[in-house]
Image (cartoon, rainbow, N blue to C red; front, side, top):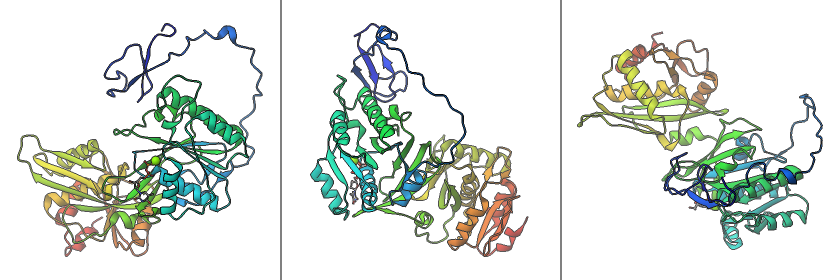
Length: 464
Ligand code: TYD
Ligand code: MG
C-alpha cells in the first residue's frame, strides 16, 4: 500500500482494507471499518535504524521462585486470576456494558487498598463524582484507593512516574484511552493497541499489576480490545444474563493460572457479593418433580457445580421441528437426539425440543450429555426423575456412556447438598458416604431406567 493511502481498519478484528466497505470481509462485522493513518511500509525505516544491543541468552532452569502475587481479598476474583494478580502482569477484563466491570474493579481495588496495598484507579469513562457515588453506595468510601480521571496515556504516565509504582493499577476502560502520538480517534484499534502497549510496558518495567477494562460487542467479541488480547497475560470475561442477578467471571486466557476457572458473584444493591456455594444458587428453589428436569453434577474449573438441566419435548405442529437451546451447545443437542434415536430407540425426530440450563449458566462440559439425555427422555416419556438424584457422563456416537473426570469431587458436592443418589457412567470408581451410586452403560440402558423409573419404583435403578 502506498504511503499515506487510506487505510480502513476493522474495529472488530483489526484487519486493514484498502477501501471502505459496509462489511468487513474478514470477520463479517457490519459498519466496523474506520479510516486510520497507514503504517509506514516495511523497510521504510530501515535506514534510520541503529545497531541493536546484544541480549543475554539463558537456559530454561527455573530459579524456584514463584512470581509475587497481589491478593486483592475478593477471593472469587483472586481465584479466577490464578491466585492473585502477578506483579508486572497485565489482565484484561471484558464484558458487556453494564454487566458490572467497574463495580468489580472498584471492589477489588478497595479491598486491596484496605489490606494495605497501593491501588490506583484511573477512570476514563466516569467522572470522579460518579465513581465516588458508586463507592459510597457500596460502602467503600473510606478505602484508600487513589482515584484519577484521565483518558490521555501521556497524562497517566506522568502521573504514575511522579510517585512510587502502584501495586495494582486499573484503567477503566481501554476504549477511552488515547495517545497524542497517533492521529486516529480514541477508541479505534490503533489507539487502543498503542495505548495498551504503553501501559503494559509500564507494568512490566515497574512491577505494577495492570487491570484493563474493555467493552464487548453483542456477539461476544471484545471490540478493539480483541486486538490487545495477545498483549496481556490474562483475559477474563465478566458475564451475566439479563434478568438474573448473578455474574460469572471466566478466565479465557491465563499465563499464570488455569483457564477453566469461574468465579460467581451476585449483583446486589450494595455492590457485588461473592457466591461461595454456587450450586445452591443454581439449583435455586427446585419445587415438585416435573418431568424433564435433571440435575447435572458438573465441574467448573477446580470447583464442582450442580446445575439443573431442563428439557421439554412436544409434538411439532410444523414440518421442521423446532430446536431451541439456552446455555448449552445446539450441535451437541442435535447429536444427543440423533444418538437417542439411533441407539436408544426413542423417536424424537417429530418433536419440538427445548433445552435450558437453569439460572442462565453456560455449560460446555461433555459430561453434561447424560444429564441432558435423561432430561430429554424424562420429558418425552412424561416420567419425572427422582428429585434427589444427580447425573453426569459423556455419551459417544455409538451410544456408550463414557466416564467423566473428577467423579469423586462431583459426587461429594452432591452429597454435601443433600442428594441421595447418583447416576454415573459404568466404570466410575467412587464411593461417597450417604450416596447410592448407580451406573449406566449406554443410552438404551438409560432409556430403560428413566422410562420405567418413578419415585415408587426405585429398586429398578439398581441394575448394574
Ligand atoms: P457497572 O460496573 O457500571 O458496569 P460496567 O462497568 O460493566 O459497564 O455496573 C452497572 C450496573 O450495575 C448498573 O446497571 C447498576 C448495577 N449496580 C447494582 O445493581 N448495584 C451496585 O451496587 C452497583 C454499583 C451497580
Ligand atoms: Mg464501567
